[in-house]
Image 1: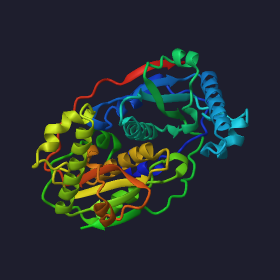
Image 2: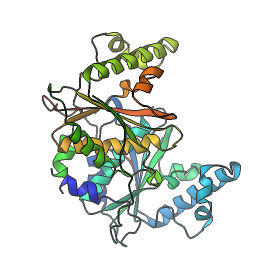
Image 3: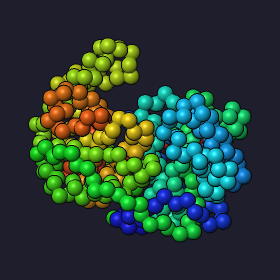
Image 4: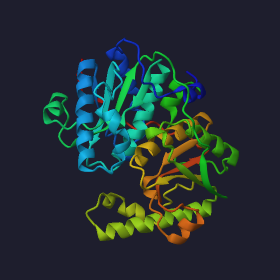
Amino acid sequence: MDFNILLKNRRAVRDFQDRQVPESLVKEIIQDTCFAPTASNGQPCKFIIIQDRDYIKKLSDESKRNLLADLERNPSSSLAMYEATLRDESFNAFYNAPCLALVIGPKNVWSLDVDCGLTVAYFMFSATSRGLGTCWIALGANIRDPQILAEMGMPEGCRIVAPVILGYPTSIPQPLERHEPEIIKIIS
Amino acid sequence: MDFNILLKNRRAVRDFQDRQVPESLVKEIIQDTCFAPTASNGQPCKFIIIQDRDYIKKLSDESKRNLLADLERNPSSSLAMYEATLRDESFNAFYNAPCLALVIGPKNVWSLDVDCGLTVAYFMFSATSRGLGTCWIALGANIRDPQILAEMGMPEGCRIVAPVILGYPTSIPQPLERHEPEIIKIIS
């Protein structure tokens, strides 16, 4: 796919067909992310893939529960704007997606957030170029139950940076509004 | 440019032709970054563009000086591996690039690092698709002199996340070695 088309057609997709993404395709997308640059070529990102909608729902419930507990401890947190959504039992943070990729990495890598940001952009472009849709679900990163983490094989010392849902879109949403780029100064 | 070609051909470029990047082209690349996803569509990234090699060298000196001071305060820091490089007066952290884009944003945006990571990936792909080369220079982010920050118009409450050099490559480097992707577990 031409990059200019891809650039303008990648959207946050939250509405998926009832159709699983073949594991081989998920692996191809992850292979593409290996081309992403990372600080000092550290390549810290690792992946956990979940292709079981019930298990994905369980992770949504776990993350929502932890966020609500955080909000109760700190009612003035910026989470307050999501309170009604988090309390809605029918709300699945992962939008009933057929596939969830957790992008994780070692907590002690100082550049982990930016490395994962770059890597997820590759993931999104690769998925879009294959006709798939993605969305980074920040609300879904709060999985803390030791049993669930053990089931998922979460390595010691790692944290979840990016939960990314993946699937075949039912439709491609309109682009969200963007403001003009803010160029503060040009020194020439 | 076809995305599959772009994906495999984007490299960290540190060796540039003695030729300035037209300001209009820099602006087109920045316009393309506006398509990047950001948390809650917050679009926090702003840009400072420097197209003056002497000024870029001054920023390199400033960043190196601050990193060496950090290292003197904390000799066991991971910066130690860069000590010889930082002490080398002839070393320009920005590799004498003709153009430097500083990607900045508000310190109080919790997602700023990942938002900038996603945005820089768009910047890199857009630049590569136009025949330009880029490299994220983490060592160049430590600009703290109040006078320099004022000259650059750094807004109150913002920080530099990503200094990205930009220019016409003299050659395209070979890809750095990548390990196979680490898929910890597939739950299906």
